Image 1 (tube, rainbow, N blue to C red):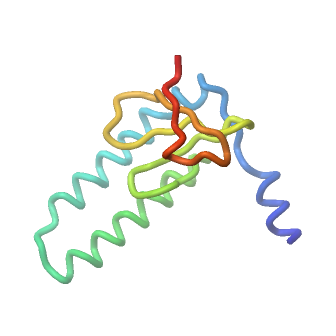
Image 2: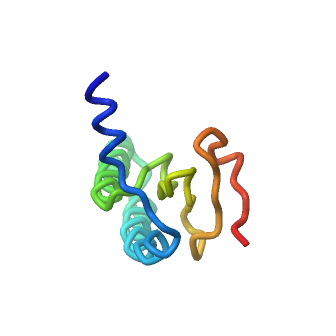
Amino acid sequence: MARRSAALNDRRIFTYEEAAALLPQARRITAEAVAEVDALPESEEAAAESERIITDWAGAIIELGIDVKGVWLIDFDNGSGYYCWQHPEPSLQYFHGYDEGFSGRVKLQ
C-alpha cells in the first residue's frame, strides 16, 4: 500500500496551458506510432509487432508524465480530473472527472 501512495504523490498535475503545450509532442509520438501500425501487413507477425509499437508508444507517453487510458487515448491529470485527448483530435478539447471516464467527457468551453 505504501508504494501506491508514493506513486499517487508522484503524479504530475497539469494546468490546461501546460497540457496544451505538451500535446503537440504527444500528438507527434502518437501519429508516428499509428502510422507504423497502419503500415504493417496483415499477418501473425504483425499482431506481435503492433503490440510492441503500442507498448513503446505508451512508454513514451508515460515518460512525459501523461496517463495512458487506452490505445491512442491519453489523459492529463489536472488535480480534479483529466484533460482528455484521443487520436486524431486536433487539440485538447475535453475534460472528465476521475470517476466518469471517457464516456463522461464534456467539451471544454
